[in-house]
Amino acid sequence: MRVDELLSVGGIILIGLIGGKLSHRFKIPRVTGYMLVGLLFGPSVLGLISSETLRDIRMVNDLALGMILFAIGGEIEWSHIRAMGRRIIFIALAESFGAFVLVFSATVLITNDFGLAILLGSISMATAPGVTLLVIREYSSRGPLTESLLAVVAINNVLSLVVFRFFFSFYSLAQGDPVSTVAFDLFKELIISVTIGAAIGGVITLWEKKIDDLSELLLVIVGGLIVGIGLARSIGISPLLVCLIIGAVTNNLSVMHKLVYPELRQTEMPFYIAFFVLSGASLELHMMSSLGLLGVAYLVARPLGKFIGSYFAASRTQEPPQVTKNLGMALLPQAGVAIGLAYTISQTHPDIGQVITAVILSSVIVYEGIGPFLTRLALARANEIHLQE
Picture 1 (cartoon, rainbow, N blue to C red):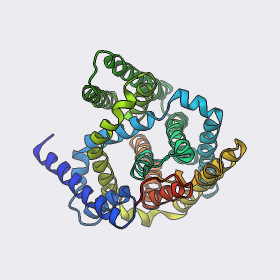
Picture 2 (picture 1 turned 180 degrees about the horizontal axis):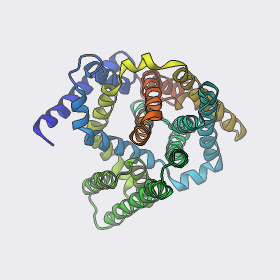
Picture 3 (picture 1 turned 135 degrees about the vertical axis):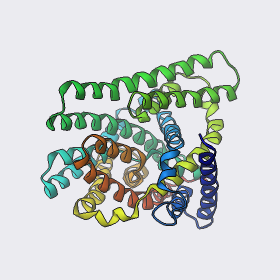
Picture 4 (picture 1 turned 120 degrees about the vertical axis):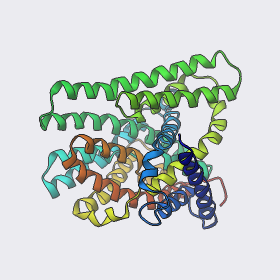
């Protein structure tokens, strides 16, 4: 990394800290403050963080998102999911496919384009893991809703990544792409991603048996994430699923994993701050003018589908009222994963990719603006916030 890039990263972290302090003073979630200062200093407003800077320090963004997905993957604890039973999987499936069905239906009604509809529908399933995680941590949230929310977000991100790859493959075949190319891309994105993630998670777990120092295990985890991201980028696949699988494998096989989490959180914070400042800087306000009827439909259909799906499933599984009434509200945020999937389409199918990218980027501005507030409100309504503001 060049000196000017290091200066940029340092400056971004510092202005993020200022944004977080100001947001806390005004009683708003810190993650919102990070994104607001990013938006203010980014290309859409003051331009002090340029588009070139955003491209140059992409590795910081990748590592931060990798850490977020590692942490979310760490919430996939098989013993815990078994204890929660099939109900949590049913809820995650219901809210994910609730969003998919409503977004798909609205898109078909407006455009009569089934290819566009299945791609937008699959992207709509994911909830931003970083926003969810940081709001929960900021307010020391604990309880049934918090547990359900973390598990559902972990599952719906896996679902979104897998379902998207299948539908994207079908769309590519329909557009005339060679079967061999599509099949190999699908194999890379799913099988190889899971294999790399499981292998690195396994190595971390084995390494743990050779050490008794938490700080060394912390270095091994961060190093493993960097290797995973680098391998994924070098063979042309998304690092998202790789990092999530590393987190899931490490959490389920490692004995010291729970002990190292507090240390890891301290290490993560500069990257998290940089990630959300960069997310704010990446927001393109001019995209709002191209929102159109399809964008408005997406903005409405996605949260409505998540709320209806989660409410229906939680009612059927007899969840406590604080989960049934509030889970859907906490599933609104959407950012990095959705943007990454939209850009994946743009790289190979620019025509439809341009439409999807416009819808996703414009909706992210709205979702990231109000999402943290609604997540906090849901946790407050469930009486699970334990940190006094």
